[in-house]
Length: 387
Length: 231
Image 1 (cartoon, rainbow over the protein chains, first blue to last red):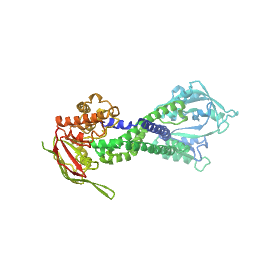
Image 2: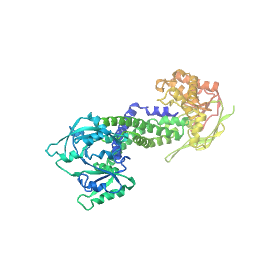
Image 3: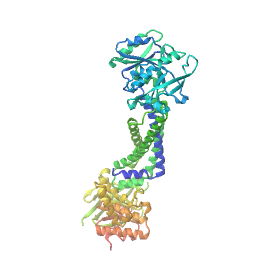
Image 4: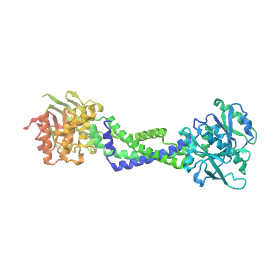
């Protein structure tokens, strides 16, 4: 710490240059924070501990293909199953397509399979007893300022009603909360009664989108999944059953390989950053050759000079990077509140900070190592005489 | 007073490609503790090279160099750096202060290599600045000081760790006459009142008059033996 003022003052020897370099570092780590937040959100999509005892059964051909409702009693009869429910993707739009949020028609026992969501008994009963009833997650309710008793009209994009109308109006009878704050992202969904959907929809009557199954013994998940799939083997509706996490992860990966995209963008950004800050550090050390020679004259060892220049370079990256990540945290917070689940973003929390700090130190080391070696190797008599 | 610096058959050869340049040739010299020695000679005579060798900034090609009983000609870079920190204070022609640090922080630099606490470092730097008459300018940066004042800060930096030897390379070369005389009087005072052994390279005969002894170098060899001067 006693060398800190030396490192700090060396860093700000050329204030304008340092400030501009810091802004570049800040921008790079702001981008890193935002993109890593997206990547983390996608990566976590199938990684929740909640749901380890649930299986999802979809059509083996495509997630979009319907399955017959007649499968229900046969699945229920498979040993190792505690409860079965089903749902259907609806894809309705609220007022404007940019207000996208998932909305699904679900069986009346669907919410019972999800104990990680908190819904009062009265609201649960109201949902089951109201044909046009709907429940929404708290984040979604906050976003659109919905209150119990509100009527929520959705414009169907896939499923018109039998009378040709595309407008489905639901009565908001419940608002659920995720018990674990980490699952807040799941609060951006609307559920309504499958029976209403089945009766009123022009298509897909008597069929469901997928089955959700709760296991009585999570250790037998593979056996149960195979048993479910055997039920419709060699039929025109073969199924694929997998854990909820695997299903979600597979679904997410259908959008794109987010990790690869984020990695490619960040690779390009950090490569540019290395060139930029590397040039700054090289220039800074070149200008300070006589000063480094003076330090060595006074008795600073080669290792000390190496350490000072490396510390300066790491400090430059950490300073800009920490501010950048902090700004990313604020931006992500605002976006999460404003846009909800429309843009999947994870909080800029501990893991992102750890990855960011590691990157700052590594990049700081990379850009500082050559100038530091130059400083370490300089011969005092040559440096002092300007050679 | 004993011999502080003992030089025997000291040579320094620089090789630039195929060219071989002998800058010092078999120099023998004893410098007494408490001496104030001026090294004079024309450009290229080897006086700065000899000063650099005595100060441990460079290593000789041949010969032995003993300072305060310790052979330094065969020390490695790390050991030499440690030795310099404990035994030598340097004053350069162009002051070589760190421009972004205040006068006090510049003076404190050698103390960063010691185990002194921050408070002790601050106190010692204050004492050194007081000794050179600049205690009231301690918070000023070098750019806010005159040339003479900057050189006094450099002298404070050189003496703050109480070194055995002060090595000065043209300390008045960049100063006007009045400032130069102030610096020379200060060096003389450090030698006379504080017993500092000083070796000073200078082109200026008037500056050399402040020394106790003057030596002349020419083409890498000593042309005169030390002779006492009136101080």
